[in-house]
Image (tube, rainbow, N blue to C red; front, side, top):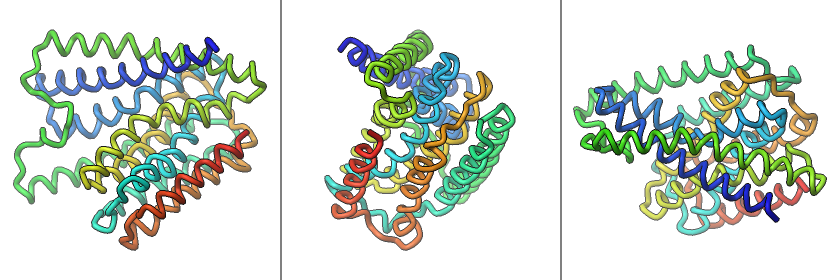
Length: 315
């Protein structure tokens, strides 16, 4: 029982510490004069992926790479089927008005490159550099388009795009957020990875399956919370964009950075099953991205049902 409780505690610490780090880093950057556009494209994006990143680093360092890779692949599948499925089940998502085609194409390209590199058998430092190079290209394109859009629309104030922004936050509060984040993230990752490994060994389940289920669902909770709130506010573009952006960062940044700690071998089950489930889930978004369909409650039931079937199949 204790490993489960410690795993839950580690997850809570990770989520709270990740939020604290984002708030501190965002407001420190704004106080130092870093443009809000750069903050939103880099610090916020990386900060919200901090729990997954710390788990990947801790898992590779602890010789449990199955948890690192399982977390990324499982999170991407959960982001589509669960994170979009539950809000759609509640209120439906009016995605017919969204234009996320370019970012969606980036996500599919990132997924295909990721799977292609996995066919080598191991994610090495070379693989990580390739993934981070692709991420850099995506960020540069996004920055250029965002700057052009702001110029055309005449929007001088960028702060409204960053939920955590408070340009008047005192330095002492920023310091508290940064300290809590920097201490809490490695502590939470250590708790979660160590106890998830114990659970895997106790119940005879592979570390990969633990990464695909317990860890992946846990680290998808912030995306789920964001998407539920966006659905309730009828902000379908925020919901869909959140999932697409999170999936891209998971594939390119998390594994890319983790390879600097050590190689990540790819278990056979990923090549024969889990990668294809992840790709299949991503391709389910085609009607909503390209053909202006809404993600109705019926689709929400279908997505959520598929995720339950996938979870059952893992065991």
